[in-house]
Length: 90
Image 1 (cartoon, helix red, strand yellow):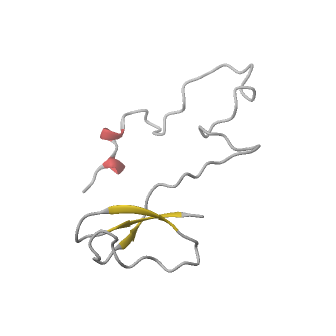
Image 2 (tube, helix red, strand yellow):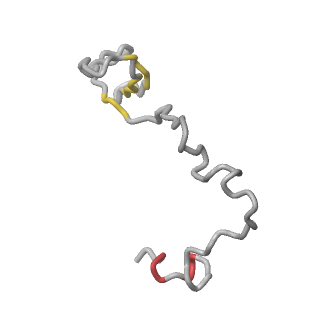
């Protein structure tokens, strides 16, 4: 059963509730009976099984025998992002 997180703006309480996906969302705070809102929080999502890598890279067996080289520069000029016109926030 999923765990949902709620917040009460009145008393600033944050609490978790285990609910079915088909259950209606809570509307009252258990602490002060104020109106609550459902908030987004981190999930415990984890990829498992063949083909998924925890770090986003292939296993060491896939790169065995290849010479390690530094990752390619994302910028063709090789400069830092501070000097890039696309990095300006104007």
